[in-house]
Length: 335
Image 1 (cartoon, rainbow, N blue to C red):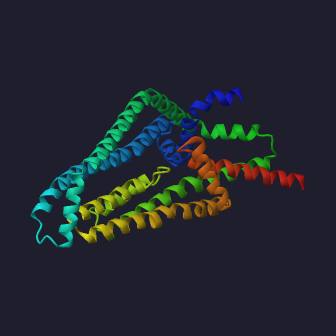
Image 2 (spheres, rainbow, N blue to C red; image 1 turned 90 degrees about the vertical axis):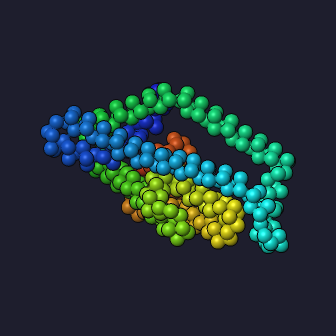
Image 3 (cartoon, rainbow, N blue to C red; image 1 turned 180 degrees about the vertical axis):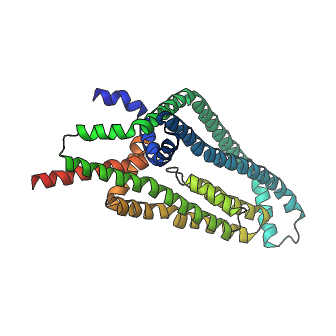
């Protein structure tokens, strides 16, 4: 119990190291075979993992921030032209002109302006506080990153020895120990590669949706959504939801009903096609490959996410799979 409390603050970094060591172990095995040196192969693999993970993440964040800033500037320009368009609109009884007049009057309403200013001020304060919290958490992040890399290096180098030692220490018969590690391997494979497959499917569906509704560079955004789909809670909605709202806003600003309809349809497409595919496929794919009931997989994903955060999505179902295996072993021994 005391030992667990000691490692508890670094549990996420430790589990992340375990997951990534499993995912990239074939690469380490290949390099070790070529280089004939365990330490060098482990070091190179660890550095490659850092590059493989950080470069796409940097690309995604850079793309999102650039597009957000561009759309923000365009939105301000469109807002500034609403009053001008309203004054020049002819004939006055035209439906689009009435909408323009209404929007112009709404933008000059002092009460509405007060609410908008208050909201913007509140959002700005929260963003500033968030940035401050991020800055203060940098030392903690660096410490966790160091532990992650340290664990990753030694798991590549000594992972096989560690597994053999744990297998010998387990108070189980040899056939039962073998069964536990087989289930662990099956479930880890199913969870990790299942999550990657589902993320690719979500990105593909998102790209198709962007193509259908006329969003520029749908292929690029599909790739970005595949990476975003791996983020719990938010997922691919961080891409398709702002795109939908931007279409709706442009439709109102340009008085283009088609754009408004496209934006609304893209929201429904994102919720019911892109968003729900994760809840439908993940329990099915992971459950079938790992030999676990879809309900147990779903509980593992949600419970793991709540307990230990992002990495819990992967670790939660694995822990429940081991529990189910132990229960089966107990039933066999009892019978």
